[in-house]
Amino acid sequence: MAYNRLSEVLWHERNLLELLLFKLEEEQLLLTSGKTRWLAHATREVETVLSQIRDAELGRAVEATTVSAELGLPEGASLADLADRAPEPWSDLLRAHREAFASLTTQISQLADGNRELLAMSHRATQETLASLHDVHTYDGSGQSAATEPAARLVDRTL
Image 1 (cartoon, helix red, strand yellow):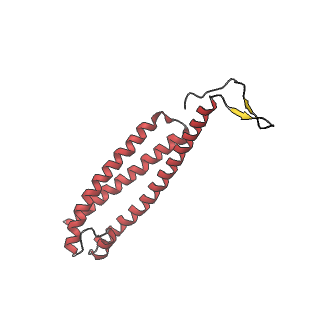
Image 2 (cartoon, one colour):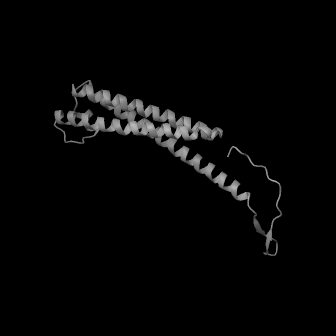
Image 3 (cartoon, helix red, strand yellow):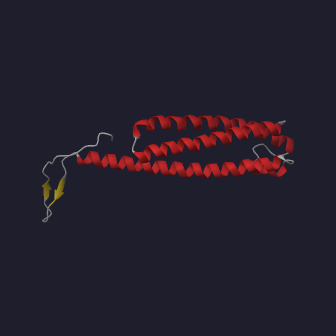
């Protein structure tokens, strides 16, 4: 019975990780398309899924502790340790969950890093655009400061 409850919690957590991956891809599509209007909503959805994952992790810890005790393992045993000691077919199922978690975690990490990079690039571009709207002082050939003449500017209001 404890194995069944643990497996249910692991499936739930896997589904949440897949949902997080989807939400991060949505966020990336918004960033790459320049349609930042919905970016706050997408970010809020990512945060909601992360909160649900934290709750699921607590449930997994409780169920894993029960299975650990049944297997004679110390509290806090890893999923790999549980899989090594669990009887068939549970050992194979726990290994499959562990491999799926590792794969999803790698994908999520890569997407999150990419999204951070896109956000940083967008931030830099916005800062550069805003800076260009101010009077800019440059140097002439003799090294003297020379103020540039104000010129007409085109502003993209979607920024």
